[in-house]
Image (cartoon, rainbow, N blue to C red; front, side, top):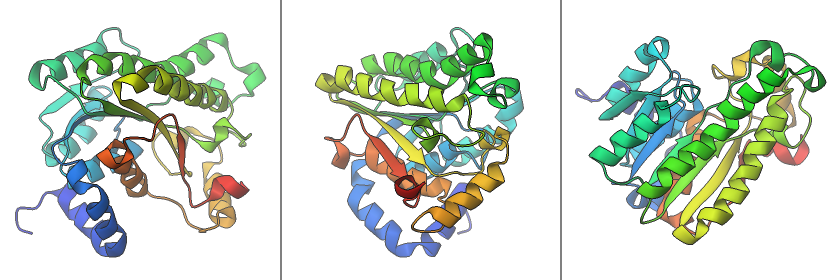
Length: 283
């Protein structure tokens, strides 16, 4: 492993830990992902769900464009992207007009097509996230809805012309969209809106063979989730109540995402796909 990148070493360790699962995954999906080109939105650092997805995409031979939020996060994201051989690494702040358009313009110019988009972006102002829903400010609600929900609509709008041969659009949601989860607050209604958008977009884009799906992982400690009050308790409750009694990993989410962007999922669209050790059936 002399010339193996840091990402490849991490993937090797994961494969050695779960050899049977990865053999099955590679046999089922690898040749249906190799050569595909996709955009991954939302990597903040090496604990991001988006990064877990990107690692598995890379393992299975996909080529990716990767974005980072700003200069502060670039120093964390760029080394990860470069280790995965990404040639397109760009800033993308969905709250800045023209930022996402610039990413898709470069993809159109250099690739001319796009096979998949993984959207893992969510944000609410701290004071609104930590308050009751009935106390959420109008400004905080609009920011949370635009950043976490409308940005996926915008990505789909920009991706559609590049998916002439069909494609896959994925976003990340959470169980708090359908059940009241303590301290999830305004993000619950926002994620519910996101899931509804998935269904409508799937219906609208289906005739073009563009699939739209949402992935709903169990609680994972990421930069975004760290802003939720008492998140440690939420993780402990998930371990205690989930049938499998363990937390999922970002690589677990990546395995599901890889299947959903692969050709074997060509008839799966408009769905909400849980990967939470079964927590949603008892939570």
